[in-house]
Image (cartoon, rainbow, N blue to C red; front, side, top):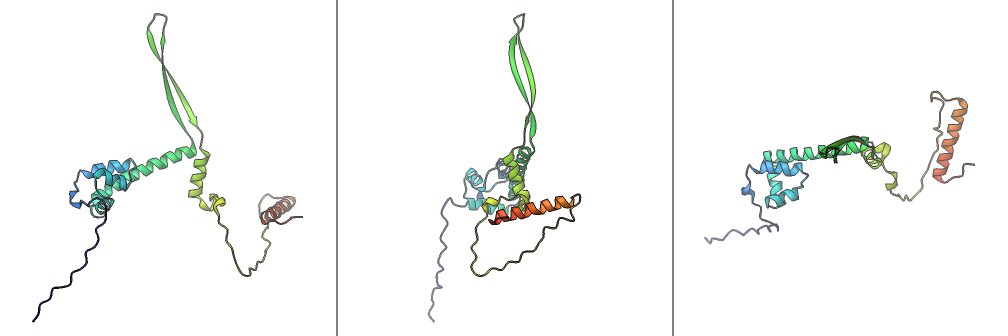
Length: 196
């Protein structure tokens, strides 16, 4: 009987980058990871801090529940700060400013004067637009980013009269007629049709 060697399996190519020092994990990393995530650090920054590859940080996140929890807690606090800052920009806010100045009195003594002023920062329009376009997309989405669609073939269209303003409370018949006329003009101008 002739003995043959089993076929050799081809080895997987090793990923490039720093070697994954998975065994180098220590419990003291928890506090450091929490503080890094709390400051807004990404996984790449965290990997650079611990001098490991990003894949090692991913491994720690998957297999070390304490490490994963520390990162989540730190990132949640960072997100909370961002939401709080954006909310303050959307609603406006007040802050106090203290000015300290030195003066010399009639006796030649230096005295410190404090002037406390409350200042108001009005809401920021861009922050409001960002907030609404993300929170109420159906109402506030930016319509300038719509794309043109080309349709080939036959399109049939039926127009139904839907401008029934008779059920709007508080409108007189004349106001209903004016509103209907304004809607027709608006539709005509949007579609590029003369409303005369």
